[in-house]
Image (cartoon, rainbow, N blue to C red; front, side, top):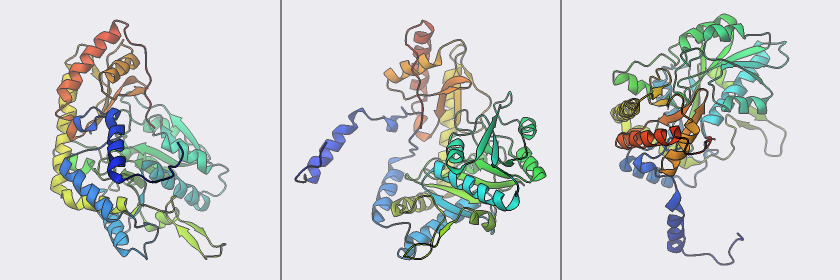
Length: 410
Protein backbone atom coordinates (compact mmCIF):
# COMPACT_ATOMS: atom_id res chain seq x y z
CA UNK A 1 0.00 0.00 0.00
CA UNK A 2 1.32 3.43 -0.94
CA UNK A 3 0.81 6.52 1.18
CA UNK A 4 -2.40 8.17 -0.10
CA UNK A 5 -2.02 11.48 -1.91
CA UNK A 6 -4.87 13.05 0.02
CA UNK A 7 -5.84 12.30 3.58
CA UNK A 8 -9.19 10.75 4.51
CA UNK A 9 -11.70 12.03 7.02
CA UNK A 10 -11.56 10.37 10.42
CA UNK A 11 -15.13 8.93 10.31
CA UNK A 12 -14.21 7.09 7.11
CA UNK A 13 -10.99 5.77 8.60
CA UNK A 14 -12.70 4.82 11.85
CA UNK A 15 -15.30 2.76 9.99
CA UNK A 16 -12.59 1.01 8.00
CA UNK A 17 -10.63 0.24 11.16
CA UNK A 18 -13.73 -1.13 12.87
CA UNK A 19 -14.31 -3.38 9.86
CA UNK A 20 -10.72 -4.62 10.09
CA UNK A 21 -11.45 -5.94 13.59
CA UNK A 22 -14.16 -8.31 12.40
CA UNK A 23 -11.89 -11.36 12.58
CA UNK A 24 -9.86 -10.31 15.60
CA UNK A 25 -9.73 -12.26 18.84
CA UNK A 26 -13.00 -12.16 20.83
CA UNK A 27 -11.34 -11.28 24.11
CA UNK A 28 -14.33 -9.68 25.79
CA UNK A 29 -16.05 -13.06 25.87
CA UNK A 30 -13.08 -15.01 27.21
CA UNK A 31 -12.16 -16.71 23.95
CA UNK A 32 -8.47 -15.96 24.45
CA UNK A 33 -5.70 -17.86 26.14
CA UNK A 34 -3.25 -14.94 26.21
CA UNK A 35 -2.43 -11.44 24.97
CA UNK A 36 -5.27 -9.60 26.74
CA UNK A 37 -5.84 -8.88 30.42
CA UNK A 38 -9.32 -7.42 30.72
CA UNK A 39 -11.27 -6.76 33.91
CA UNK A 40 -14.18 -4.46 33.03
CA UNK A 41 -15.44 -1.84 30.60
CA UNK A 42 -15.17 0.71 33.42
CA UNK A 43 -11.45 0.10 33.87
CA UNK A 44 -10.95 0.06 30.10
CA UNK A 45 -12.53 3.52 29.88
CA UNK A 46 -10.21 4.80 32.62
CA UNK A 47 -7.16 3.42 30.83
CA UNK A 48 -8.20 4.88 27.49
CA UNK A 49 -8.83 8.34 28.90
CA UNK A 50 -5.68 8.40 31.05
CA UNK A 51 -3.53 7.24 28.13
CA UNK A 52 -5.11 9.82 25.85
CA UNK A 53 -4.50 12.65 28.32
CA UNK A 54 -0.75 12.05 28.02
CA UNK A 55 -0.67 10.77 24.45
CA UNK A 56 2.04 13.14 23.20
CA UNK A 57 4.17 13.42 26.35
CA UNK A 58 7.50 11.64 26.21
CA UNK A 59 8.64 9.58 29.18
CA UNK A 60 12.23 10.26 28.14
CA UNK A 61 11.86 13.93 29.07
CA UNK A 62 11.15 13.86 32.79
CA UNK A 63 12.38 17.41 33.32
CA UNK A 64 9.98 18.62 30.66
CA UNK A 65 7.09 16.59 32.06
CA UNK A 66 7.29 16.48 35.87
CA UNK A 67 3.76 15.04 35.89
CA UNK A 68 5.06 11.92 34.15
CA UNK A 69 8.04 11.77 36.51
CA UNK A 70 5.75 11.92 39.53
CA UNK A 71 3.40 9.23 38.21
CA UNK A 72 6.29 6.93 37.30
CA UNK A 73 7.88 7.31 40.74
CA UNK A 74 4.56 6.65 42.47
CA UNK A 75 3.89 3.57 40.35
CA UNK A 76 7.34 2.17 41.15
CA UNK A 77 6.80 2.92 44.83
CA UNK A 78 3.48 1.04 44.85
CA UNK A 79 5.06 -1.93 43.06
CA UNK A 80 7.92 -1.86 45.58
CA UNK A 81 5.38 -2.20 48.39
CA UNK A 82 3.60 -5.09 46.67
CA UNK A 83 6.93 -6.90 46.30
CA UNK A 84 7.90 -6.45 49.98
CA UNK A 85 10.64 -3.98 49.16
CA UNK A 86 12.01 -1.36 51.53
CA UNK A 87 13.46 2.14 51.27
CA UNK A 88 16.54 0.78 49.51
CA UNK A 89 14.53 -1.02 46.81
CA UNK A 90 14.65 0.75 43.45
CA UNK A 91 12.81 0.10 40.20
CA UNK A 92 12.60 0.93 36.50
CA UNK A 93 9.42 1.40 34.46
CA UNK A 94 9.77 -0.55 31.20
CA UNK A 95 7.87 -1.43 28.04
CA UNK A 96 7.15 -5.04 28.96
CA UNK A 97 8.45 -8.23 30.47
CA UNK A 98 11.09 -8.73 27.80
CA UNK A 99 12.66 -5.34 28.49
CA UNK A 100 12.41 -5.89 32.24
CA UNK A 101 14.22 -9.22 31.94
CA UNK A 102 16.75 -7.70 29.55
CA UNK A 103 17.58 -4.92 32.03
CA UNK A 104 17.88 -7.41 34.88
CA UNK A 105 20.34 -9.45 32.83
CA UNK A 106 22.22 -6.33 31.77
CA UNK A 107 22.53 -5.27 35.42
CA UNK A 108 23.62 -8.80 36.33
CA UNK A 109 26.32 -8.72 33.65
CA UNK A 110 27.68 -5.35 34.76
CA UNK A 111 27.54 -6.44 38.41
CA UNK A 112 29.48 -9.59 37.52
CA UNK A 113 32.23 -7.51 35.91
CA UNK A 114 32.81 -5.95 39.31
CA UNK A 115 32.02 -8.80 41.66
CA UNK A 116 33.08 -11.85 39.61
CA UNK A 117 36.42 -10.85 38.12
CA UNK A 118 38.03 -13.60 36.11
CA UNK A 119 34.79 -14.88 34.62
CA UNK A 120 35.38 -15.23 30.89
CA UNK A 121 31.78 -15.45 29.72
CA UNK A 122 29.07 -15.01 32.38
CA UNK A 123 26.56 -17.82 32.69
CA UNK A 124 23.03 -17.88 34.10
CA UNK A 125 21.50 -21.16 35.22
CA UNK A 126 17.75 -21.59 34.92
CA UNK A 127 15.08 -24.28 35.00
CA UNK A 128 13.84 -25.49 31.62
CA UNK A 129 10.56 -23.63 32.35
CA UNK A 130 12.23 -20.20 32.17
CA UNK A 131 10.73 -17.74 29.68
CA UNK A 132 12.53 -17.41 26.31
CA UNK A 133 13.11 -13.72 27.06
CA UNK A 134 16.01 -14.91 29.22
CA UNK A 135 17.76 -16.47 26.23
CA UNK A 136 16.86 -13.52 24.03
CA UNK A 137 18.53 -11.15 26.50
CA UNK A 138 21.52 -13.46 26.89
CA UNK A 139 21.95 -13.63 23.10
CA UNK A 140 22.08 -9.84 22.88
CA UNK A 141 24.28 -9.38 25.94
CA UNK A 142 26.86 -12.10 25.32
CA UNK A 143 25.77 -14.30 28.22
CA UNK A 144 25.36 -18.05 28.35
CA UNK A 145 22.24 -19.75 29.68
CA UNK A 146 22.29 -23.30 31.02
CA UNK A 147 18.80 -24.75 31.28
CA UNK A 148 18.27 -27.56 33.77
CA UNK A 149 15.36 -30.07 33.81
CA UNK A 150 12.59 -29.26 36.27
CA UNK A 151 11.52 -31.62 39.02
CA UNK A 152 8.60 -34.04 38.96
CA UNK A 153 6.37 -31.20 40.20
CA UNK A 154 7.33 -29.07 37.16
CA UNK A 155 9.13 -26.56 39.39
CA UNK A 156 12.81 -25.65 39.45
CA UNK A 157 14.92 -28.35 41.10
CA UNK A 158 17.29 -26.59 43.53
CA UNK A 159 19.65 -29.57 43.81
CA UNK A 160 19.92 -29.92 40.03
CA UNK A 161 20.49 -26.21 39.62
CA UNK A 162 23.19 -26.19 42.29
CA UNK A 163 24.90 -29.12 40.58
CA UNK A 164 24.90 -27.08 37.36
CA UNK A 165 26.88 -24.20 38.89
CA UNK A 166 30.24 -23.81 37.19
CA UNK A 167 33.19 -21.40 37.30
CA UNK A 168 31.43 -18.90 34.99
CA UNK A 169 28.05 -19.00 36.73
CA UNK A 170 27.03 -15.57 37.98
CA UNK A 171 23.25 -15.75 38.22
CA UNK A 172 20.13 -17.84 38.73
CA UNK A 173 16.74 -17.33 37.09
CA UNK A 174 13.40 -18.44 38.54
CA UNK A 175 9.71 -17.89 37.81
CA UNK A 176 6.70 -16.84 39.88
CA UNK A 177 4.88 -18.26 38.07
CA UNK A 178 6.27 -19.90 34.94
CA UNK A 179 4.33 -18.76 31.91
CA UNK A 180 3.54 -22.17 30.41
CA UNK A 181 2.41 -24.20 33.42
CA UNK A 182 1.83 -21.53 36.06
CA UNK A 183 4.24 -23.00 38.60
CA UNK A 184 5.97 -20.89 41.26
CA UNK A 185 9.54 -22.07 41.69
CA UNK A 186 10.88 -22.73 45.23
CA UNK A 187 12.28 -19.24 45.63
CA UNK A 188 13.40 -19.57 49.31
CA UNK A 189 15.58 -22.57 48.45
CA UNK A 190 16.95 -20.83 45.38
CA UNK A 191 17.59 -17.65 47.38
CA UNK A 192 19.58 -19.61 49.94
CA UNK A 193 21.54 -21.28 47.15
CA UNK A 194 22.22 -17.93 45.45
CA UNK A 195 23.41 -16.40 48.72
CA UNK A 196 25.62 -19.40 49.46
CA UNK A 197 27.41 -19.13 46.12
CA UNK A 198 27.34 -15.35 45.78
CA UNK A 199 25.00 -15.35 42.77
CA UNK A 200 22.45 -12.87 41.49
CA UNK A 201 18.91 -14.30 41.67
CA UNK A 202 16.32 -12.87 39.29
CA UNK A 203 12.67 -13.76 39.80
CA UNK A 204 10.51 -13.50 36.70
CA UNK A 205 7.17 -12.49 38.20
CA UNK A 206 5.93 -10.84 35.02
CA UNK A 207 2.70 -12.84 35.17
CA UNK A 208 2.19 -12.91 38.93
CA UNK A 209 4.03 -10.05 40.57
CA UNK A 210 1.24 -7.49 40.81
CA UNK A 211 -1.76 -9.73 41.53
CA UNK A 212 -0.21 -12.58 43.54
CA UNK A 213 -0.20 -10.57 46.81
CA UNK A 214 -3.97 -10.11 46.44
CA UNK A 215 -4.50 -13.78 45.65
CA UNK A 216 -2.80 -14.43 48.98
CA UNK A 217 -5.04 -11.85 50.68
CA UNK A 218 -8.05 -13.75 49.32
CA UNK A 219 -6.99 -16.77 51.37
CA UNK A 220 -5.10 -18.79 48.78
CA UNK A 221 -1.67 -20.19 49.57
CA UNK A 222 0.93 -18.41 47.43
CA UNK A 223 4.56 -19.48 47.90
CA UNK A 224 6.97 -16.69 48.89
CA UNK A 225 8.73 -15.19 45.89
CA UNK A 226 9.52 -11.52 46.52
CA UNK A 227 12.04 -9.39 48.42
CA UNK A 228 10.88 -10.93 51.69
CA UNK A 229 12.98 -13.92 50.58
CA UNK A 230 16.70 -13.49 51.35
CA UNK A 231 18.85 -13.86 48.27
CA UNK A 232 16.41 -12.39 45.73
CA UNK A 233 18.22 -9.62 43.83
CA UNK A 234 15.75 -8.47 41.16
CA UNK A 235 12.12 -9.05 40.19
CA UNK A 236 10.30 -8.34 36.94
CA UNK A 237 6.54 -7.68 37.22
CA UNK A 238 4.28 -6.61 34.37
CA UNK A 239 1.73 -3.88 34.93
CA UNK A 240 -0.01 -4.68 31.65
CA UNK A 241 -0.53 -8.28 32.74
CA UNK A 242 -1.73 -8.87 36.28
CA UNK A 243 -1.74 -5.12 36.98
CA UNK A 244 -4.46 -4.82 34.30
CA UNK A 245 -2.92 -1.58 33.01
CA UNK A 246 -2.57 -0.50 29.39
CA UNK A 247 0.26 -1.73 27.20
CA UNK A 248 3.19 -1.22 27.14
CA UNK A 249 3.95 -1.26 30.86
CA UNK A 250 6.17 -3.37 33.09
CA UNK A 251 8.63 -2.94 35.94
CA UNK A 252 11.90 -4.40 37.10
CA UNK A 253 12.78 -3.85 40.75
CA UNK A 254 16.15 -4.28 42.45
CA UNK A 255 16.85 -5.02 46.08
CA UNK A 256 19.03 -1.91 46.39
CA UNK A 257 19.74 1.27 44.43
CA UNK A 258 23.28 -0.01 43.99
CA UNK A 259 21.93 -3.06 42.16
CA UNK A 260 19.75 -0.84 39.97
CA UNK A 261 22.69 1.37 39.07
CA UNK A 262 24.24 -1.57 37.23
CA UNK A 263 21.37 -1.23 34.72
CA UNK A 264 22.31 2.36 33.88
CA UNK A 265 23.89 3.07 30.51
CA UNK A 266 26.05 6.19 30.24
CA UNK A 267 27.65 7.70 27.12
CA UNK A 268 29.43 11.06 27.13
CA UNK A 269 31.04 11.39 23.70
CA UNK A 270 28.47 13.26 21.62
CA UNK A 271 27.64 16.90 20.86
CA UNK A 272 24.76 17.12 23.33
CA UNK A 273 26.81 16.04 26.32
CA UNK A 274 26.25 13.05 28.55
CA UNK A 275 23.49 10.59 27.75
CA UNK A 276 22.35 8.38 30.63
CA UNK A 277 19.43 6.00 30.70
CA UNK A 278 18.01 3.19 32.82
CA UNK A 279 15.87 1.79 30.00
CA UNK A 280 16.63 0.07 26.72
CA UNK A 281 14.16 2.26 24.85
CA UNK A 282 14.73 5.97 24.34
CA UNK A 283 11.40 7.65 23.77
CA UNK A 284 8.75 6.15 26.04
CA UNK A 285 4.98 6.73 25.78
CA UNK A 286 3.85 8.98 28.57
CA UNK A 287 0.38 7.53 28.15
CA UNK A 288 1.50 4.10 29.35
CA UNK A 289 2.91 5.57 32.54
CA UNK A 290 -0.23 7.65 33.09
CA UNK A 291 -2.54 4.70 32.45
CA UNK A 292 -0.58 2.52 34.89
CA UNK A 293 -0.83 5.19 37.56
CA UNK A 294 -4.55 5.53 36.87
CA UNK A 295 -5.13 1.76 37.03
CA UNK A 296 -3.38 1.35 40.37
CA UNK A 297 -5.17 4.31 41.93
CA UNK A 298 -8.55 3.53 40.36
CA UNK A 299 -8.58 -0.08 41.52
CA UNK A 300 -6.78 0.22 44.85
CA UNK A 301 -6.23 -2.77 47.09
CA UNK A 302 -9.93 -3.55 47.21
CA UNK A 303 -10.26 -3.55 43.43
CA UNK A 304 -7.26 -5.82 42.97
CA UNK A 305 -8.61 -8.21 45.60
CA UNK A 306 -11.84 -8.43 43.61
CA UNK A 307 -9.91 -9.12 40.40
CA UNK A 308 -7.77 -11.73 42.16
CA UNK A 309 -10.85 -13.48 43.57
CA UNK A 310 -12.60 -13.45 40.17
CA UNK A 311 -9.48 -14.76 38.42
CA UNK A 312 -9.15 -17.63 40.87
CA UNK A 313 -12.85 -18.45 40.57
CA UNK A 314 -12.41 -18.51 36.80
CA UNK A 315 -9.46 -20.87 37.14
CA UNK A 316 -11.29 -23.18 39.53
CA UNK A 317 -14.46 -23.26 37.44
CA UNK A 318 -12.50 -23.94 34.26
CA UNK A 319 -10.50 -26.73 35.89
CA UNK A 320 -13.66 -28.25 37.37
CA UNK A 321 -15.23 -28.37 33.93
CA UNK A 322 -12.12 -29.77 32.29
CA UNK A 323 -11.40 -32.45 34.88
CA UNK A 324 -14.99 -33.65 34.63
CA UNK A 325 -13.97 -34.87 31.17
CA UNK A 326 -12.65 -38.43 31.39
CA UNK A 327 -8.86 -38.51 31.51
CA UNK A 328 -8.22 -34.76 31.58
CA UNK A 329 -5.52 -33.67 34.01
CA UNK A 330 -3.92 -30.39 35.06
CA UNK A 331 -0.12 -30.39 35.04
CA UNK A 332 1.15 -30.03 38.60
CA UNK A 333 -0.47 -27.86 41.26
CA UNK A 334 -0.27 -24.26 39.99
CA UNK A 335 -1.11 -21.84 42.83
CA UNK A 336 -2.18 -18.81 40.77
CA UNK A 337 -4.43 -18.34 37.72
CA UNK A 338 -2.22 -19.82 34.99
CA UNK A 339 -2.23 -23.55 34.28
CA UNK A 340 -1.93 -26.16 31.55
CA UNK A 341 -4.11 -29.20 30.96
CA UNK A 342 -4.04 -32.31 28.80
CA UNK A 343 -5.91 -35.47 27.91
CA UNK A 344 -3.28 -38.24 28.03
CA UNK A 345 -3.03 -40.21 24.84
CA UNK A 346 -4.70 -37.48 22.78
CA UNK A 347 -2.88 -35.25 20.29
CA UNK A 348 -3.16 -31.88 22.05
CA UNK A 349 -2.13 -30.08 18.88
CA UNK A 350 -5.20 -31.56 17.23
CA UNK A 351 -7.31 -30.46 20.20
CA UNK A 352 -5.95 -26.92 19.93
CA UNK A 353 -6.68 -26.88 16.22
CA UNK A 354 -10.24 -28.06 16.79
CA UNK A 355 -10.70 -25.42 19.52
CA UNK A 356 -9.43 -22.73 17.13
CA UNK A 357 -12.03 -23.71 14.55
CA UNK A 358 -14.65 -23.15 17.23
CA UNK A 359 -13.29 -19.68 17.99
CA UNK A 360 -11.11 -20.45 21.03
CA UNK A 361 -7.50 -19.25 20.91
CA UNK A 362 -5.41 -21.94 22.61
CA UNK A 363 -1.71 -21.76 23.30
CA UNK A 364 0.03 -25.10 23.46
CA UNK A 365 2.64 -26.40 25.85
CA UNK A 366 5.10 -28.96 24.58
CA UNK A 367 6.92 -30.12 27.69
CA UNK A 368 4.62 -31.66 28.79
CA UNK A 369 2.12 -31.53 25.93
CA UNK A 370 -0.97 -29.58 26.82
CA UNK A 371 -3.03 -26.43 26.42
CA UNK A 372 -2.22 -23.29 28.37
CA UNK A 373 -4.86 -21.18 30.14
CA UNK A 374 -4.36 -17.74 31.70
CA UNK A 375 -7.54 -17.14 33.69
CA UNK A 376 -8.77 -13.58 34.19
CA UNK A 377 -12.15 -12.28 35.43
CA UNK A 378 -13.70 -12.44 31.96
CA UNK A 379 -13.05 -16.18 31.80
CA UNK A 380 -15.38 -16.94 34.70
CA UNK A 381 -18.52 -16.61 32.58
CA UNK A 382 -17.01 -18.54 29.67
CA UNK A 383 -15.60 -21.42 31.71
CA UNK A 384 -18.49 -23.83 31.11
CA UNK A 385 -18.56 -23.15 27.37
CA UNK A 386 -14.77 -23.64 27.20
CA UNK A 387 -14.99 -27.01 28.94
CA UNK A 388 -17.86 -28.10 26.69
CA UNK A 389 -15.86 -27.16 23.60
CA UNK A 390 -12.82 -28.97 25.00
CA UNK A 391 -14.85 -32.14 25.47
CA UNK A 392 -16.00 -32.01 21.84
CA UNK A 393 -12.48 -31.36 20.58
CA UNK A 394 -10.92 -34.14 22.65
CA UNK A 395 -13.45 -36.56 21.22
CA UNK A 396 -12.74 -35.29 17.71
CA UNK A 397 -8.97 -35.50 18.13
CA UNK A 398 -9.22 -38.88 19.79
CA UNK A 399 -11.10 -40.12 16.74
CA UNK A 400 -8.17 -38.97 14.59
CA UNK A 401 -10.06 -36.02 13.13
CA UNK A 402 -8.00 -32.83 13.10
CA UNK A 403 -4.36 -32.60 12.16
CA UNK A 404 -1.95 -31.22 14.71
CA UNK A 405 -1.72 -27.47 14.64
CA UNK A 406 1.08 -25.92 16.65
CA UNK A 407 0.30 -22.56 18.23
CA UNK A 408 3.17 -20.48 19.53
CA UNK A 409 3.03 -17.23 21.49
CA UNK A 410 5.66 -14.60 20.96
